[in-house]
Length: 390
Image (tube, rainbow, N blue to C red; front, side):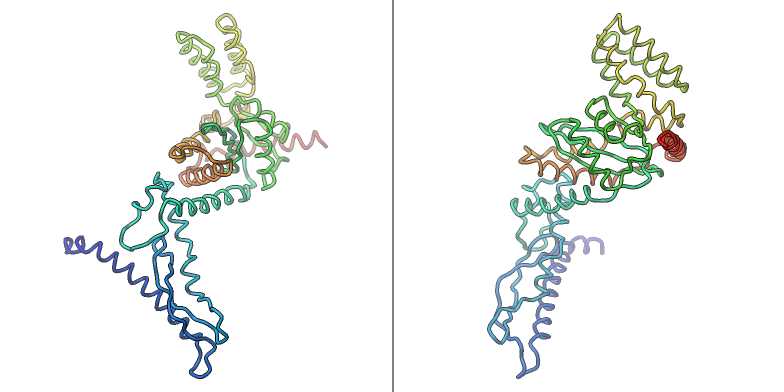
């Protein structure tokens, strides 16, 4: 029986496809029969057949359609025929293939050959992918922002000559969501501010305190400060900070400095941690003034999560921008077949589709069970700032 089923698999698929087309023809014939009317009182009459197509199995398939005219000689459209051409499966099928690293040039060979079809050539697939990715971008940039966000991670990624600036939110339950995407030549403050203003319009509150994790880019810091002011508790990415410091040092000193930085950031008392970091700055003055200046710049903001008194799992989570790096990794993999960006609109379409695809694999952040600590700390800071303002 197993051998028989394996041997007939292709024939069964082909038979099912042909059966589907037969059902479509029968539905169109039934519609014509119902609209002709009784003999002698016909409002329509048959007018032969014409070559056409329907969308079936994710592609266009040739189908001879019946025609019908009114008694005064005007063409009468068949609602069933129009419906069979617009089922949306073509776009959904095309949208799935680039996600799986299938280029538009190879799409035709990636589909099953059980039904003779057309409309799956490179140009047709490109049009369908453009429509599908535009819909994904619209979905990303128009959906509402959760009203219980406790943390915001912002970073930029250069893909060839273009830069994608992305905002990622974490809600009180530990769920991550891509909040917005903006395109620019670099991570300048204008680009970042435009992204944040768009997110605010969709529901992000600027009246409540929120933890904001950033790398060392001054443009990001400026944009966050302009929009949120003191409500933003900025945490500098420790990974970026350590990397920037080590780049100023000779190889024989890098390991020692890295070890001392990790030990200082592991200190649970924020005053002791800052004191130790100041000692490292003083020690680096004699080794590399550039490394000392790099560490001193924004030093206090590398200890924001320590001052909040968070659980060690939450400190590991929000100590860096690694939450958003996975998005960029998937986006880079997703777009590696693109030879060049023809426009900013194309860049946004591809990046938006890649981010939504990456989002489907998101898990809750490490330490999500302790996020009530962060929520409580932010609420207290909000109340304190409101009292001061009053």
